[in-house]
Image 1 (tube, helix red, strand yellow):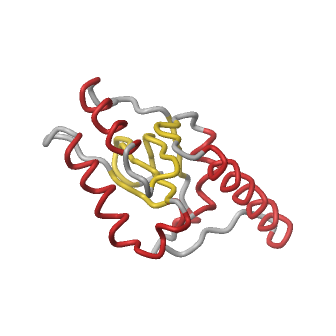
Image 2: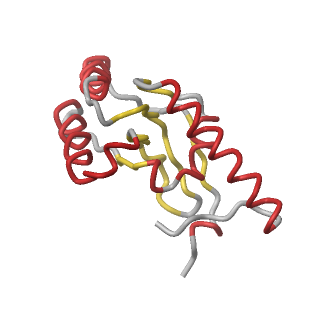
Image 3: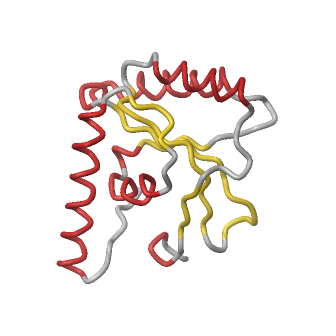
Length: 146
């Protein structure tokens, strides 16, 4: 079995973005969702998995919303399902569960929604610090199991 740490993952601007109407609907729905602090809409290409990048929505939830994660996930899922065309799919990932991905996701430059700039700043700083600590401890960045 090959682990995620053995594969190269590339985050980039969507090569086949959503149409303007869907983009507007999704942005509005996520902006209205009180549980969402910020979100990035990016293409993700995992080496050796599929030929095409997968459009993915990386969402950072407000800390208080994590107490009722199921409700938060339902709200985000409803926003996505109500906005994207039926012939498209978008992977939804909760960054709070894998904050080590935030540094690379941010680097792609695809911020989609930012409801809480301070929460984004704090999350980015913590992710960067965690990455640096991993490098110091192990010589490389480790992946959390998820």
